[in-house]
Image (cartoon, rainbow, N blue to C red; front, side, top):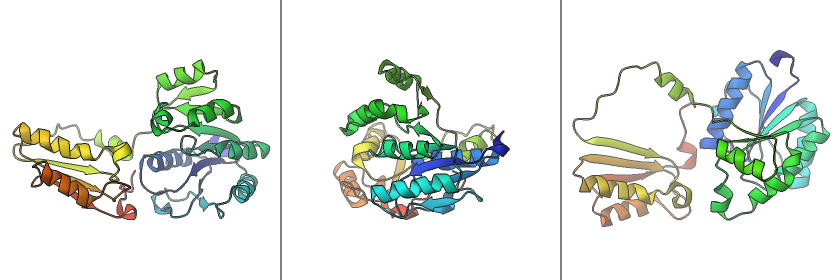
Length: 268
């Protein structure tokens, strides 16, 4: 019975801001909270925006950045919050999740490792986190992946307590089902907007300029606006310069915003 559950920790994120992982976490928190579970969201680093969480869900940031102190606070949180289950959203993005899972187990809390990308992501990133997951999977009560193929991979590697579950739909998508009328095709200029961080390695934002080049070659009238914070090797200024060199500077425009202003609608 959800109402009788001592507590469920939905954890944890490095920072709670924008982005796909935060969107999934906040959606899960809302669904669990509405089902009657007590949910606490915990972030490892500072700089989070707790306003994206549904009303009534406690938010905690770990006070220290040193692992021993974090583990101590983790144990204290598990006891104080009477946590039954932890959903760890950082298994693909950090190396110390097994330590947190072991500390939680010592305090009577099971940990679910939630993967936010497909199994080949560590291969693309060039790290050994797949090996870490395979070696330390016994510390998890369950491993949740995005697809049946991911399940097949881990089972072939000897991990049986694995399942797949698609990310929860956003309220914006659910609300769109109420509008049954088909949107008419644009009769004039095609207005396009891309929204995200200006990162080449994972977002491939320079390819957006090439999309503009192809649309121009097809004779499609369009305007493409690229909105996001400058990142490691790509800035709005550099994207605009690239668009001019490719002959689509009049139609492709990059606009830089700060990360804190790249805020998803509250419903997400």
